[in-house]
Image 1: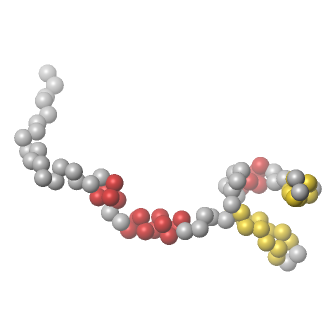
Image 2: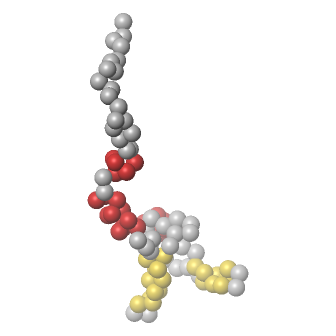
Length: 86
């Protein structure tokens, strides 16, 4: 595939075809890493820093207690009964 370098304000840019963006799961404003390797421009998705660690930490916590605290801890609900439909 061939593309051109274009002027964008005082900078230069390259238009990336939407099928390539879809293959890499990139959208507008996606973070990317750009580097030169073996005389080639390499563009890779750049995952947000710290997200993997944050999700790992969350998976190790008891989320039920964190998000759904036992607010009825001191209440006795044994008296509660659902009425049967007639």
